[in-house]
Image (cartoon, rainbow over all chains, first blue to last red; front, side, top):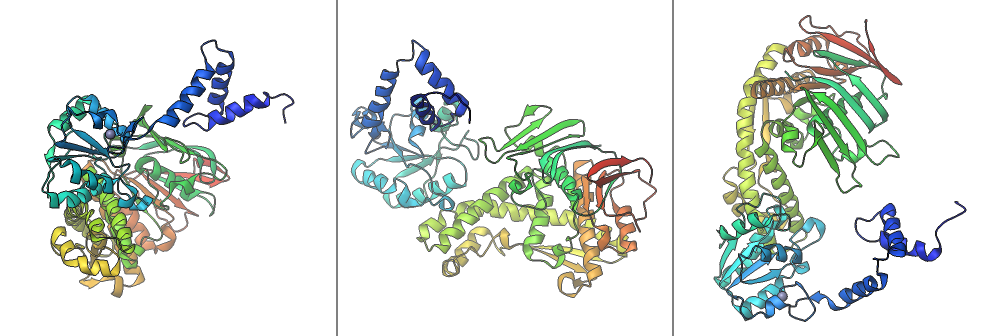
Length: 203
Length: 355
Ligand SMILES: [Zn+2]
């Protein structure tokens, strides 16, 4: 045991910081020291921001994206076309697609992809929600923006089967997305091209 | 011609740190059992192919009490290095000439190996899985497409089998069909071509060893296209809870003098055929890659009679570099056509200048 250590409140701070993703013991200590000593740290504002964000951010009931209301601003936007639905795996896939400026329809995040080996089946994904939306919103085209690995392929096929009775046009982003990779890793140009050149995926 | 001139191991198996200067021709590593001779060969294999012939999980190869192993080597003028640390974010760090590789394609195209093990005769009379693994060891080194198709096929197959076993709805089972169709057909096609190319090479090797007639025949695990085969077998698959057709049911039929070797061959014949398959593969890789593969022969001499030993050494591709482990050199007659070096491994490793 070393004779001298930081005071308990400081140690508690580093313990909490270490719980954050990709922060190790050295990093936690550095951040804690900065918090205590830098005039720019504003720890109270930071604490409030963390509290506020976690309190007020919820999932949009329709697309699944982060929102402070029940429905996010994009789903609430009447000027957006409801004719096209873009289906993505994770909510974090929505912003990269949105930033391409090439898509003006609505999104639906599944919250993952079929992966029985990891215990993820259709019940773990927002597929029932998607079917409900099809009933209400009646899109004419569904764009599957899913990754090109085994799980993404299986999910795309599963959804295409589910949607087939609706006779909705189904397309799939593939062009330019390298096999095994997903939307989040792709750059804007690649995504834009992928959106433009989407292929027919209807069964 | 590509030669492994240096091999460095850190925290690999029982080795804390070890470096070895190797030579063209035959490199014999001589020492008593349990000194890690095999680990040196395994390290050379993992360095070049990122896979161990001895274990599925590389984690096993990490030295007890450590969290990562590191391998490096000079091969064909390139500096290869591989760090395997399963606990970290980047599990496998690959470098060629100090440049980190994001993809494995370039790295894996650097070198080929053929592994000769003392249990090779199980390829002949073991379960079909052994013969498919042998074919994979050839296919994976010959084509990048093979690797991609095999990876997709195996993952989709495991997922589909789990869904079948859990008696999930048919739609979840069929979600994997298109992946099995695309990659299964491609894989069976690649394996058929592979067997066609391998058969004459193996037959020739067999003829040199024992003047016997060896025939290989590829029997695909689906007698029609994957699409038709899956359609036909779905009802049965749901009943039995597993996928019944596809390349995971492939067979490599082996006949010696027109007789199936697995059931009717003698022990000696099985050894001859196993050697012929490996030598045939070595010659095929040499022919396709225009440079001989690195040959790794792990303790194979004890299993063989003097005639087969000589035939094996004489049958190795002429310019090939080989690493061979043995407990002693008794009864091993060295060919005159190639240079030979000896290393003694007992606690420490040292090259012997004279033998
Ligand atoms: Zn929304």
